Image (cartoon, rainbow, N blue to C red; front, side, top):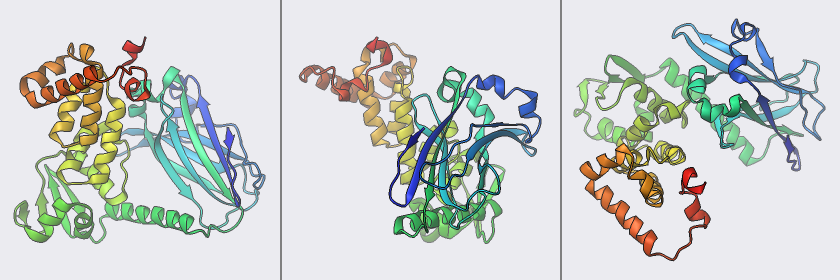
Length: 364
């Protein structure tokens, strides 16, 4: 637990660690219904009103898809607590202590009882499938950044932040409920009722299609057929277009990178490149070089080339490297040029710039 206070604000960073988590979520008392839940120890924010807070975790089953979600809530301990104005960020810490699946809440008005809930905080199956990342040593780490304000949130930055979250929430409702939609995207046998103005403002490609040459991909009036991506990718891309974020992006990241490149969604592309840089290993670096090259992802490509050159002896033994040499000679040439630069440069193997690309196996 750490505390960082500023004038008019009282902040708390709290981490809730749940041991033996895979066993916990199999308990009948936890999985039976939402009345079965885990509760964190209570905590308070120093210097603020003496309210006690706690986190609550339970399972939510989605009847339409039979999908199971982990739901996460933050609440004050009882309804008699002192009225406060607060904001919080809820997230999971992965095995690299990086924040994932962050959710933001804020009450613009003073309230005597706060109960914020993210019903679909994380897909249970995704958590289990990626347990090495999200459950190191079978432990789930949930983090919270909680801020209590002494007076009105009247600074320009705070108001702008609240306003942005309100706009994003409204746009998400617009996407989900399809109100006022005036264009239909057709992907396979799935149709998405969306809004021309939003597509045009967010994507230069949609802008060209819908304003300049609308007949090219049209199947009929006010229908636009998309053939280059699947339904899931289109759904997640639209989520980003409307809200500037994507839930569970990692589960479909390579297809989203391709979609971001094709539709010129710069923000989505940057997010995908950053996350893919973090995922590079000896085994997949050659494949990611090709992925980055095909989709003009320069940041990702440069990082992969540097990593590949530093670890060239091990990379050459992987099956993807053979495909690179056979089908992508330009990438092979660039990799060799990078290796030559490393060999001829002054020897500085211990600098952070070099060490970050050296695999764990080589460091041992």
